[in-house]
Image (cartoon, rainbow, N blue to C red; front, side, top):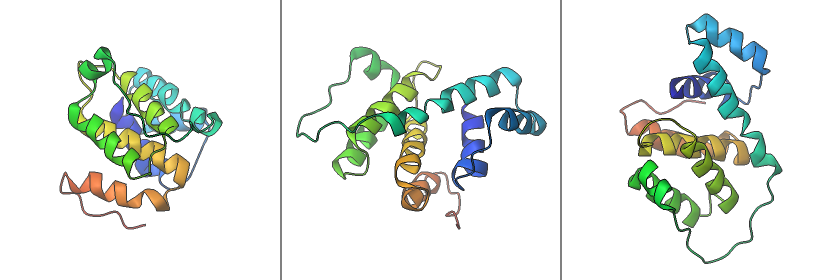
Amino acid sequence: MFDILLYLYDNYLAADLAPDAAVLSSKLSAVGFDADDIDRALDWLAAMDVLDNIEELPSHDGTRCYTALEQQHLAVEGISFLCFLESADFLPAHAREWVIDRAMALEGPEVSADKIKWIALLAINRLHGAGNALWLEDLIRGEDDTPPTLH
């Protein structure tokens, strides 16, 4: 399912294209993705709409304490990355909570730091626009020796 999210980011989300779910589903099927995975990915992605409707939490100097379940399911490096983004004032608290929620919704024993970074990229792209998320995209892609994105 995560491969579908990356495909959607590369082909639609980074360019602020938003075809409806039926069009996306048929295009993803044509590319060769499994129908069940497509449905799960589109349901997962639909939760991005929540980012637009959540009021930003008040700014504070408190620390986010992760539950035992979150600590088991989320890679430590991913949690550290979220702390970095939040301390740099690039990921507001409500978006951090959205990233954590979407990461917890992924299947598997542990969500890797790379997946958490991609989820954070989706949130930042949604909140700040594609242009303001380019540095993060290059940072994430740079780790796997992919050339920088030319937009």
